[in-house]
Image 1 (cartoon, rainbow, N blue to C red):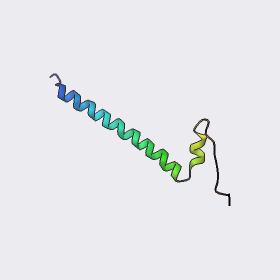
Image 2: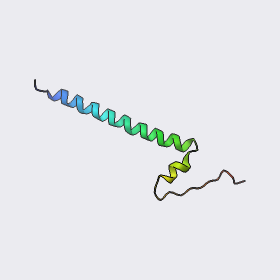
Image 3: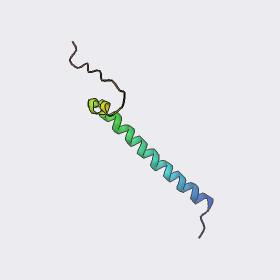
Image 4: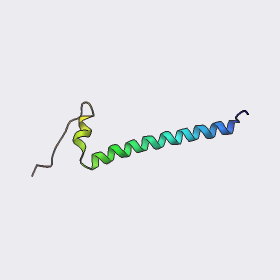
Length: 58
């Protein structure tokens, strides 16, 4: 059987939704790691990033 245009559009929408969920999950992971204080490892993995540790300042 041949696919109709509507089923192709539905398939494309499903792929876009899955890609959006993956991107949002990655962003949530990165921001969660940054907010939890695990920025040292996260910052080391980003080329050219600088670390400002202000926890020991008065």
